[in-house]
Length: 258
Figure 1: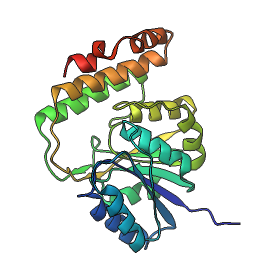
Figure 2 (figure 1 turned 120 degrees about the vertical axis):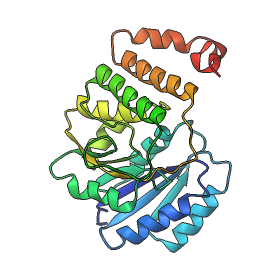
Figure 3 (figure 1 turned 180 degrees about the vertical axis):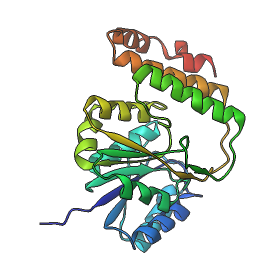
Figure 4 (figure 1 turned 45 degrees about the horizontal axis):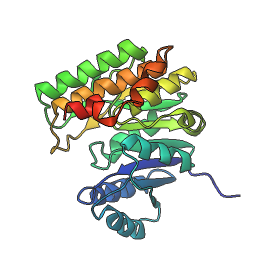
């Protein structure tokens, strides 16, 4: 009987040829000395040479596995695919840009204890942020989390940090219920965990702002609408979502605010 891997780390990758080599090398070099693990890179319809870079990394590091699932339209869809194929006792995900260094991710492994899941947070005491974020980004992040907690009462300060870890039995159960949402995937995941009765721990993390990203007004609107849509789906008013989805695409709000 094949020995079960203790840890599966999922890395969604969309056009990451310039950043993912450094991340894979760093994570493998670190975890080789720490734990029995595997890394699943879920390549999501890339238009660059991400696949080639990952293929070369897999030759250097035998713990790397990868699959190209084609364009699924969201990071959440790629992560959820990873949930379904990973087989570690603990299954988590992290961003390809190494905003979360391997040592910070390993703190999730060490801190999960008796919990069903553990998530990294940039917004609780003890978090270390390498680069001060703009007022606009901080305000948008805090406002988004306020709305999330008003709608879903999660009691979580930072739902969007890209480093989370769950026990296999918990994530395998809820991943079947997750929809493909561009901005609300993490909220959906955590809400499904809550609905299923699983307990989630939030700990401060080290966060290295990757840079190169700018918060746009359209993004803020899309994030709010994604959470509103999710709230309606889990309510008696879900028929509104079905009616909205039947409208011509040109009448969708995301198209109007382009």
